[in-house]
Length: 384
Ligand SMILES: CNc1nc2cc3nc[nH]c(=O)c3cc2[nH]1
Ligand SMILES: [Zn+2]
Image (cartoon, rainbow, N blue to C red):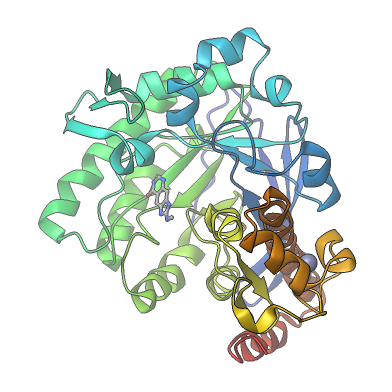
């Protein structure tokens, strides 16, 4: 039972309104300073102030409601101070809908040459030029303030997927201390929301520990993310934790699952009550010629498609599927033509945004279970 705890000295700029539940699946609306987001929602990742290969107009065309910016990358290049001088990320990249920025921690752990995790923060070397840098909770908030995102993430440690309890327990406790420091550092309390990140690996009791420690400061958080998943743990462990932890998150705030973007996993997450997801997969695999279809993934460079006059996905009404054949898009990839990467990216993003839109409709109509079963049955058939 989550008891409402509000700190009256500031209003969270992020408001969540639950519209309909169907089991634990939920449809809702998130109000942000840059407009509303209908959930469940997929968030395309725009790492370096661009969703790779997509223009802003194309992102609007496919009804993208919110995009992600990566703090680590933008801090290193072009610099959060430069972005701030141009009025923040919205103005710099001409995106006037909501933006969520991560804390930079995950990229430091996965990209930067991590020197050491200390109580005060992480020392690392840039993956660009090896220069030395330091990221603390306060520094992360300052960078995200400069970027002017609508939703900021706390600086946390995302332990490797199968970390032991002995490693996880002190890591969770430091992540909680860092989260508290982020609240204190978030000077624009009325301009940007701050999400907490629940850790705890694949252990239910450690998930409870992490959440309860963070919920102590619920007044400072506009939403809750489930971190520490999709980092190499077995799928059944991720599903078990999703089923256990998601329904325990506050009902009146957005719930964000970090790093998930495979159709089957997304519907599993929605079933347990997740509202928001992000993942680089759809854009990354798109650039390499793998696309999502109703009947599973399809690798367009495969010779079997050389004379295939069907669209990438026969059930899709996106620009790429309405105008081009598999044969043509395969040719573009074989010829190294950039348009191939653009069309595959466009389609993959459209596919996931549509999947979430259809899930939202199914929840509102009270038929989510049937919807999920239908999608999984077809997806498991493998591409025809
Ligand atoms: C691709 N999978 C994945 N991307 C993630 C990003 C994250 N950021 C902060 N904290 C996390 O725990 C975290 C977990 C993640 N899993
Ligand atoms: Zn399509």
